[in-house]
Length: 271
Ligand SMILES: C[S@@+](CC[C@H](N)C(=O)[O-])C[C@H]1O[C@@H](n2cnc3c(N)ncnc32)[C@H](O)[C@@H]1O
Image 1 (cartoon, rainbow, N blue to C red):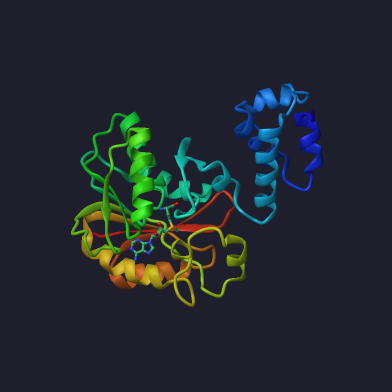
Image 2: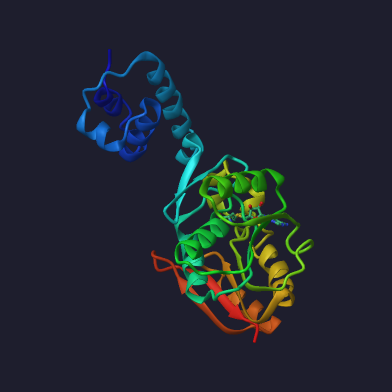
């Protein structure tokens, strides 16, 4: 019978970490156990599963869809191919919200997908003992909302889930509106590498700004005085997003950079 180490070396074209995590999943082992006991025999059934997963990884399917989960803000979220896999750079949106949130605030995560932002904010304020008002996560995808609600339940997050085409069913007001909307241009060549993720979560018109152009003025009307709009966007969209915010009447506008040094989140306030 083959062992873990020999399976790992047979698939060296794949990233080592990905291979180890797949073994953990197939064998019910921790990563420490895989590293400490590479001579562990690999029976036929998990081996067949691992070979199939290796093939899917080679075809470009993201590891998170194979494992059906992804870490975000230290939380494990279930994902499926109906939701965008939460990205580490989106944690900047959560961090920025937590820096401005006050007791009683009503928070909206618009286009919540797996529920990542809403659940991270609700969990962080709960563990800090801060009593905020309602945290709402909304999306127009019923499958995404089911995934988000399941994640909220599993993680014990106090979030209200709403089905809505952007703001159509969301009267507000909110003190914080957070959104990581689709922002990739329809012709962007990077989309080829994202073909497993829902296109409605990724693209927004010819320049990628259609959703943001729609959201900014509507968000302004739903913000309470002093409330903040915080939007994730593409690394090269900050100037346009700031201009849209300014034209709408938001003030205190600034852009925050992610850990890679890219412009990633722009924020503005309704004064
Ligand atoms: C980039 S994904 C963000 C998902 C999640 N917030 C995250 O950061 O991982 C954008 C989300 O917006 C949702 N969306 C797209 N168009 C929408 C619309 N017209 N109304 C509401 N939600 C929409 C998509 O279903 C998707 O879940």
